[in-house]
Image (cartoon, rainbow, N blue to C red; front, side, top):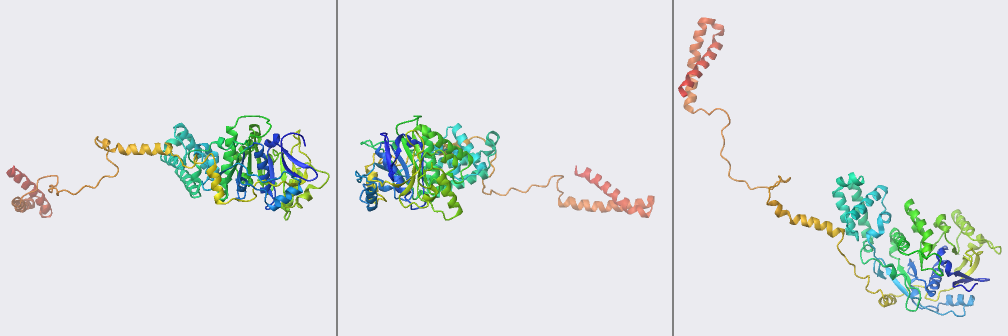
Length: 520
């Protein structure tokens, strides 16, 4: 090889190196379970660290934590070093920082709801297009009103406020349904039960704490404990995509450099692309395409090359392909696709070699000094110098205690944000209630129950005054006498047939007139 700085990866007929200046051209490590992908990842991470390049990687199975401990005593590693004639092979621990979203196996990692943004939050909550639209309104209104969305309770309080003011907001921002807000709240509750709440809050992660070197100039290796995190694959993939996006947004343009500023290993890469909506997929492709100029290299680790979309696969200049099993038509297609991505080597058939590779053996293809992929080579991968395997609880705690970040992220900070402001307004409204009662106010919707007082005196019915008993008797007697006299007179004038009715009418009229004059 040339005199340029490089990482020794493996050997066969010739040694194979990954040139540091092309470390930001991204890469792929693929292969079936148990073929040696994790050891290859550890070898590459050690190589970058030894050259002063900080590294981030997720420890999905718990067997990458050994990179923090001195190795070199593994029998298989010693045998492989002897096979590859690595005369200077000796054990060495790497400067390591353990991280954990749940704060159990490493320093806690937090970010704010605002920094995650509505697009990634919608994917995390598995929202449909309508629900994502309402979530966008929540972020927009919070921004306009100066309400900080830092943690879960800020987002929950903001959603509640949006639901209570849905009618007013609909005319300005579009339809806001209380049912949709309720659905988002339920999804937040589910994420909370899965432990996702701890990811949101302050102090938020400072990327400078990851992108740094130790006192000896070695790149710090950041190991994320992801065994528990993998129980929620969507949270795992969303977190890693957020971290990658933050690197893209925060780091300056540097163009072509002698070595990367940071290398990011994305294990279980298929989770990143599973069920990703088009807007998110476009974002991923953009980040992978452009983050190279920020000096960041991204290596995807997955079982099958078909897990990575072609538009992303075409951006990966460094390839390590471990064995694949061709038991099904789909497996056979994957073998063919993997072989076709390499520059052919007339010495052997890549298609045949992929299914014949042993553990720790791989097809390698890196970029040469001119940036052109070299013909694929079948090689044995170099063993790492750190421990292959996990660490004890005592060893993990010792690494965490000796870290310069010890105590910086351990305690969460809850400063004034949307929740405090919105609940403070409600509290102020309740406190002002006695002052409002001193002034006349409209009748309340719900009246207070009152104790019954003394029964009021009965009131006479409206109309003329009630007659006494004496008057009533006089009226009855007079009415009878007047009726008889009138009836006898009517017989003489009109005849017997009409005398009864006329007598009663005339008699009543005469009596009313006489009694009326007497009573007055």
